[in-house]
Length: 316
View 1 (cartoon, one colour):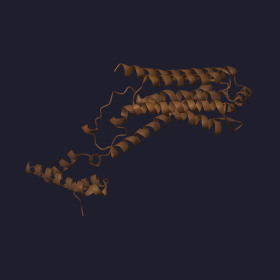
View 2 (view 1 turned 135 degrees about the vertical axis):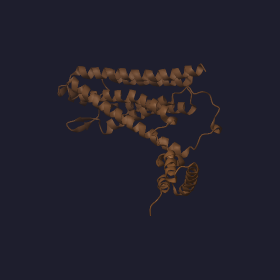
View 3 (view 1 turned 135 degrees about the horizontal axis):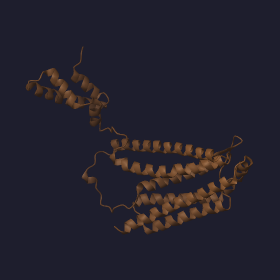
């Protein structure tokens, strides 16, 4: 038994639909296609040619089925695209450079060649950049699919009366992600070790920083995370929030700068092993200086965001 083009087309369209809607869609398509073919036959077109024309105009069955199922055929749609783009830009501008500095610092402990130190940093930075881009995109692709199946279609009744936001939500989300990565990295370094010495794991941070200095660091991270969540919740910057943000940033700078200045941030065993292996102390000092400047730069960026948001709120 041979099947007509129409039957094959309808089967291709409905095969991926749920059982609840398959029969309704099949009945609807059979009726609309038959009517369209009859209209063309009445115009003097052969039925076979009319059938091919109608089905061609309907287009790809998979595309038609996606329309019936209200299923996204794009990875990230316009609802999430700008947030994805902004967040990805912020993360790519911050996480790979930090990784580059960390990887270069670790490599300097066992290698005295500037070229190999830079190559190790660049390789690790590029790897992290690829992972950041991939996983952020996967996250937003999942959000796109969840939104397509749970939110329903928008209508004017969903409009709310609220003041214009002065918050860059992507920056706040990136801040939370960065704080989480920092906390995880500190814990991982302490318990698993990022560096290797004689094939044994060794911490980069000085173990003597536990419990007080590390506890202070985690307190600052937690306070900054709470502030970021609060900003996202109220969707506005205020002068009080900007002041708290500034104080936290200054305390963070002070803590890291003090530890760097006293030479207490890096594990002494790692430094001694690097010197024994022939590493130059100048490289260690330069990397420590770069780490300090990076700390100041990121903290200043955080302060600037807070006061810019407050200024925008005042001007509206």
